[in-house]
Image 1 (cartoon, rainbow, N blue to C red):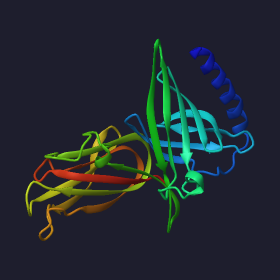
Image 2 (tube, one colour; image 1 turned 60 degrees about the horizontal axis):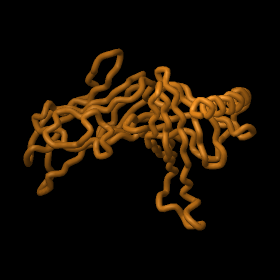
Image 3 (cartoon, rainbow, N blue to C red; image 1 turned 60 degrees about the vertical axis):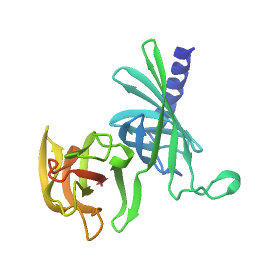
Length: 255
């Protein structure tokens, strides 16, 4: 039964993808998403063919094919020989229950991924938020990661973390904003390094003099903008726990 389902879905996807390679137009919904697939974070990006409803693109750096019918997205992915079927629904902020506005102002997608690996089957959750924002420079493809969502390698924000590390598939990055807060004690001062993983090694791009508090507040977040313009697969924020990194997030710009 499982094999028949995979063959059927693969056949449908093949037909749709073949037509999709010839003709692609604008989707009524976002086609670039920041996703979390059972703990694996990165980008889902695809082209959409309104005639066949077919889509093709990349998910976490590997090719995917499938179709989008209304707000229903289904994708086929092969990862290290394993078959994965992604099933998700796009939540439109303009279409809430019974015609009521959706509680959020952004597009959101959520669903399940079914994995077929030998004799073992598994079903896992995945979700994503639209990865396009409009600004002065036009529409930009962005990826947002935060320790509060446990999207760093350390899987938490604090306490007494000398480094916060964010990894993602190797790709071209134009720039990123890194926001962090140090701690340990009032008025703790440290030099915080902002590094990227490029050409198989960590490389410091900027060093910031940080203070852990501001006035009577123990919270003193600092945002640093860093230009990259090359392929990277990681960002890390560190002070070797002179004051420790208590909180962090990054916004990565790909265009």
